[in-house]
Length: 556
Image (cartoon, rainbow, N blue to C red; front, side, top):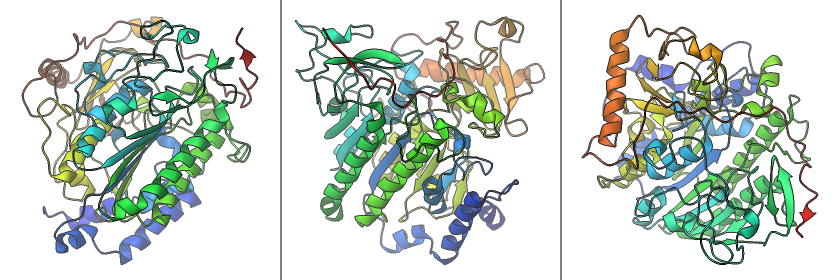
């Protein structure tokens, strides 16, 4: 094990609080410090036992939760997140973690495949509720890898990676298919079950995308008979309500954890992937959470998400599985402008903390996300890590934990974070990380330098792609993220050699089909690192009436 500078180790164990002082954050940090003072190094314990058993893995993915929404990462947050803070105090919080994209679908593809989504057929934007499968046939996924090592696998939540819906009269649905022509009585092909999940319950895409019906394994649980609207209009089951989705996902997960406890204790571990439907629009906190934040409906919804995390982790601990379960909590991208982002900033809450931008953007507010790990058997409590990591890293991390090698055509952009979790990372884990925005714009980050290969946000914040403002700006942006985390001072003209070096590195990653060591692989279709396609409008930023869409119109 590599030795560490004792002075640096103490600095990374408990981060100092900043003013104005936030009591919730203070308690979380103090709890971590107290636990640390009395808890032996779990890595030493594992070594004395000759190594730890295969851990259970619980991966909780929030939907559109900003870095600054979590109190343990932003002490100035106006939203209380006591359960997430408690998770951080008992484990490790990462301060430089990034989603593979600043929007939903591509990030999820990267989590499960260890490959940047821009290498797939999806070069920009997201899928819809009826889109065909995105994960390529024959591609190794995290659940398939774990099943090779006798794990049981389950997913409860928002899928948003496409599946093949059968049409009435034959054929399969496409992105723009009429939902009323889908045959909901027939099995759905190439969904979660096809990529390695033994069990699935959830919704096909975002909560504001039809069809509005729950899916269980490869079938719809109801045949839609009415039309409902949550931002988008489409077929719905008569009893489907958006407000019920988050509680249903949590209940299914809690029930599943209790049911797996005996087998897990007997040596058959599990992987549970819980991609929550919230706090993405429609913003629909239940009555118990309405008004709780004192900020806005989005704040209430974030508090409900925090409670959901608490319920699931308590179920794990109550089943006696907490010690050797790797729990990861994170988000698929930054907070959306549709969450009343501007209004929250005006009231003193910054969902992106001090980072620029929000969901859809290449700026860090679009993809720098909360990333918290608890694993008592291997991770010291109350620790922080400033390593640059990406959500594509799950695949390689699982392989490292299991002591197995990935095949050359799997996890092309995945790096194991196990050395960081065990406190033995003495050098950067990633050579560089690639960022990607809603409209397909690229950025690359290496050390303190971040290069954006566009003059604009690449997403929904100003300067918008194609805007008059953007046309007056230099074609690229270079920021020193150590000195300028808010990305305010473009240094591209002062450091042309850095621009050239990072551009060449990104071109190499594209050409070789991977960003990790190994034989070159093929991308699915050509990759253009300087796209010109404009993003879709962000829409009016407002909270959604929790009752909107509850009155379905019968289908004639």
